[in-house]
Length: 197
Image (cartoon, rainbow, N blue to C red; front, side):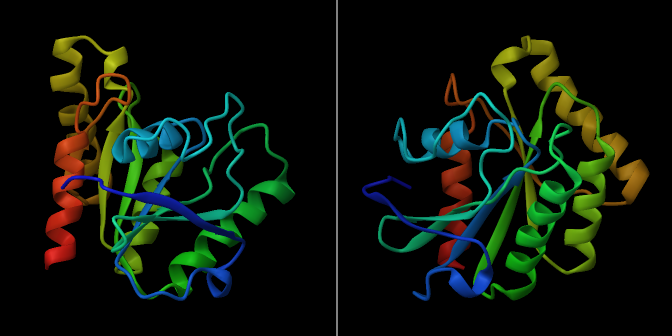
């Protein structure tokens, strides 16, 4: 897939405020500071479509971007920021659950995982929740440029083995880097095939 156009459409605090246009929708979500904004900018070829912040937990709204005038890329709030107050965490959880429970055009969710880490409880809980609610998702391992060649190959495989042992879940996955653009073509190709289906 070639990205020929992209534009920010709107920010929403709940599903009823999201755009009414009926386009396929691809949600991107992950723990705070996992590299979501950087990945979105890499996928679209923009340097500043999604705002990148050094401070985790800055995305507190559902952001819709229209890509190629035929699908939405949705940037969801990052979860699990340790320094966020209980009230802020609850608000983020409400925004996320409201979106998934009430938005009917979600084709696929991409859950971003830091490729340097082993399965974290917060990610596992979220995957189980998606699974229980019959929400199709795939994983994107981010920040692979921070690993050596051997780690790039081994880390995701070990993660998936560990994940399957703990949950019985075995989603498809991609390995990415916003710095080297690794995984960009594969992810866009995956989105394209989902749209065509």
